[in-house]
Length: 249
Image (cartoon, rainbow, N blue to C red; front, side, top):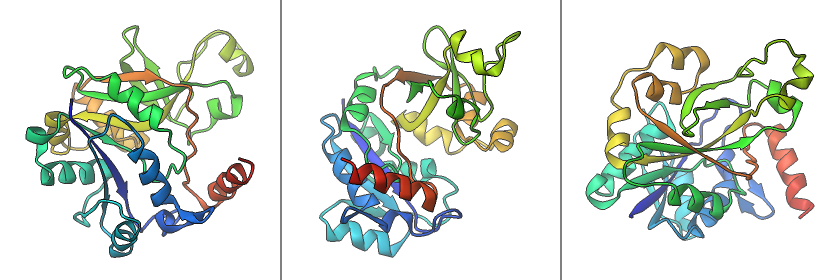
């Protein structure tokens, strides 16, 4: 199976402009993500997809592979689709894995585990971790996913779902398993080409979660459970926490 790993990285960010070029322990966030992904045994190629010359030049400077993409893309998924097409589409690669450009400690094993989960029939696959903390459970910035018995995504939400009737919120995790979505996606190449062409759905607009568009149009998303704890950098406050974790290693 031939898999390309694509790391979307944009300079302009509402909450944290210039984030990919911020340093942690002497290396930028984007360099750390690239180096971690390059250790994944399942990826035939790793490419940074950006629309900014500063990021492009920086990736070249540390020896990484990078492609300049259209500035009008509304999401990282669209950026991944452009890169996949530039690299030969489904003729060259069976799957494309979209890896978040703001997770400097992404584990290669997580990428390999998701890759090993793919079977050519799988349209889209992603990862999820069991929630054990009440703050995560109730935090709207932590996206929750409800699974079917076949480990397909039934729904994603910023809300705490499912609802445990008749129990106090503090007791919910004693009666039900809750899962936190880990934002890494594997797309079958033909499916990635399709989903960037379908219109935005009402559910996606409501929750601001693009995966609801794919579910709403009938695409199936398989979910691989993981023990990996994601450490994304969305805000300057997150960076402080990440640096503290790095310093304690």
